[in-house]
Length: 355
Image (cartoon, rainbow, N blue to C red; front, side, top):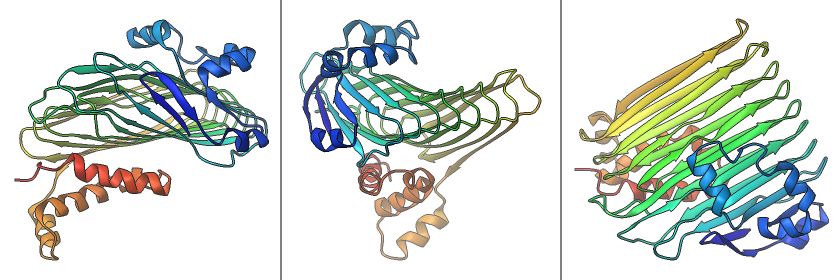
């Protein structure tokens, strides 16, 4: 595990055990000293410094983060994890994560985020770059619980993050899984560039907003290689006076033969003052592609509430049960211990949304 407080890596555990398997798991500052050529080769190769305003800001001021390299043919013996926390007042966090999976390797990486309650807004502008080579797989999971602000919308973290993975090798795979419950404003679109033939990109997301939170999340799947596949499962849950937006891009390039994509975008409204918005963008330049998109918007019905409450649950417990069922397609993609904590977070985030 790597712990990053206020953009500084303060501790990295299990390093010796991982080194026996050839896995490099260091803070970026230490990796730059120890493996400068490896870092130089990949840093900024997926998210260039002029990609967007916040990526440029990160490039200018980032001081630390996490570096992972999995050598050829190695299956990482444990799930790697990083904990991010903003402690100081009047500051932002600008960490950077770089993960490289060499040929035939596998890694599962988890990150968690928290911050104390403050009346002032703070900025989190991170950059995450993933690189998967031939037959490699990266699974990247996030449970985001930055402070969302109080019930009147005062305070909270501005979470403006750039996350992107490149499937550069044949039969490579990158899977993003995220549970977003915190931050006052969220702006993030974990993406996959499917360059290698037969490469696969997946995106599983649950985004919960309550009170005055604003979430604008989604993904981008860029199909460049032949026979590439992508899958998008997005679940948005809105309560209070919040707004939850899914914004997705599926792009099939002209030379990409036999591409397949499936997108499912479901929204659940808890109340009559919240909003859910779906903004899909599909661009297909090859006639052999098959693209599927489906979207639903629903509310918790009186019948569902009656059924649960007739079995001894109170109103908030009934809502939590329905919400967890709604999000199960994403939760099952998380490691077991993460899924349990994420389910608890969903219930806590929606407290006070009933009645």
